[in-house]
Image (tube, rainbow, N blue to C red; front, side, top):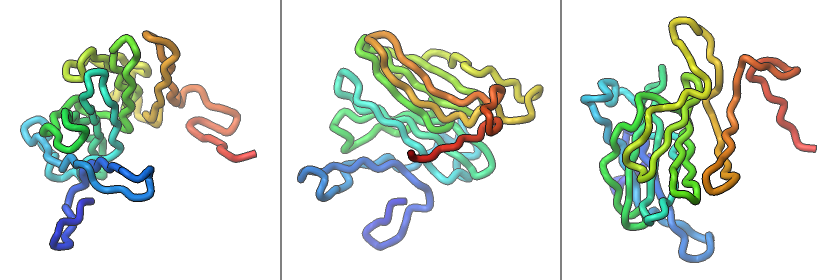
Length: 190
């Protein structure tokens, strides 16, 4: 949350971009994307907590792209996209990119294609060649909310380029439990 010069915090969380000019010894806010919901598309926009889980990518033309999720504490809100042409100092007004999505991940492949992965419900992939116009979502884990009453994935993903026009996506699929159980992970250090 941003604390203004009067010491008062914004009631909604935004996205901050920091810059260090001394090899990471100190950081200053370079720019920020304040939470500004589109109340025509997102009628619950004023009830949401703000932006969370931002993804960030520097596109091949130097444009900074940021995609963030929203939530209202009771459900998943839309993902918004914002752009900067001046190294993250100023940003365009955020626009709704998709009606839902958690922990968006961005990856620009060396062939120029931008990949956006997000989840809940299920897991979706979207593609763009400019970061402004996106394909319809490709459903990695199709989800019918009327048939499936249980969550089928945490929706959190990761992307890894494996070539100029190839990538891997990592995601959970609760239909395939491990020896511990569905959606349960035993993470420990050796």
